[in-house]
Amino acid sequence: MFEPRLGLEIPGPGGQGVATLAQLAADDALLRNLDLSAEERYPLTSDMLSTVVPLIEASPPFVSRRMQLVQEKLAAHRHMVVAVSPSNLAQRLARLPGIAPAQLWELPYDQLRRDLPVDDAALQEKQFLLQALQLQFPDTRLDKGNVVTRRALWRGRMLQFAGAYSGEEGAARYLQLVRINDPALARAAGLREPNPVVLSMAQQDAAFWLGHTAYARKSFDTAAEYFDRYCLQAEPDGMWASAARYNLARAYEAAGNLEDAIATYRSGEEAAENLPEGMDPPPWPQRHGDLLRARWLESGWKPE
Image 1 (cartoon, rainbow, N blue to C red):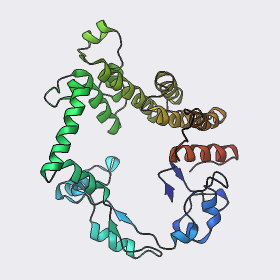
Image 2 (image 1 turned 90 degrees about the horizontal axis):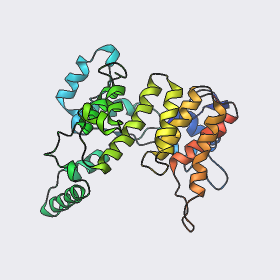
Image 3 (image 1 turned 180 degrees about the vertical axis):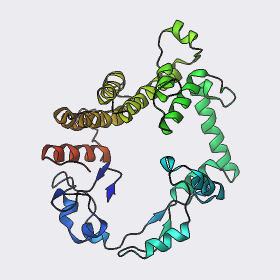
Image 4 (image 1 turned 135 degrees about the vertical axis):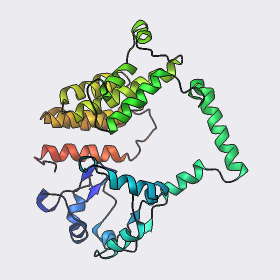
């Protein structure tokens, strides 16, 4: 069992392996390992897991014949699940103990309903939001897709998803292009981004994704530099700050630098304590997961 909100696998009995659903339903002590303190407890108990309702992702792309054909044609080293048969999956799940009848996951359809307005009021609201975005960032209009900076960012991200990290046609090359700050070098590279706000956002994105690219290549020191120097130090309150802090700790952890990893996981607690007076920190799942991971690493836990 994995806890996606906390970003952790749930340790099994004795801290060994990954707990199964049956083990968690039978032994509440395994779930209590996810408590931070008597005041900050993990919200689930073993009694709540006696019957679990599975939610099946069955949004239109996943049930399309086209995606089924794509999945069948993928080479073994590129295999991924991009299609699903909801009825077959529901039947398989029904044979498992402690599993209630499966239901469709509603979130994708809620999003689809927002993206495809079905009445005048919804259409008007979507048009208003689009106009507000264009007033803030004029160069985000759909008819201005020729800005090379954003095309390089998009290309780098797609190559990253494909696992192509280095070389002339690698993610790192395109993402590094976005981070060129010298105007003369930018012009020589064919980069044009007249809006400084959009450029700053694109460069923040590129720095964060370059960190991920370096991590995937097992260049953990380089990954740590991107997450620390170019994300956290450059934009301590930026949109990637929390994610960069977590990934910086993971880079330290992967490099065997557990002391810095533990300190970095706990640094999010300092950020919560430094909020303006009168503002209580929200119950951030990432903060909870980071503090748990720091505690477990300190006790000698080794992730699977």
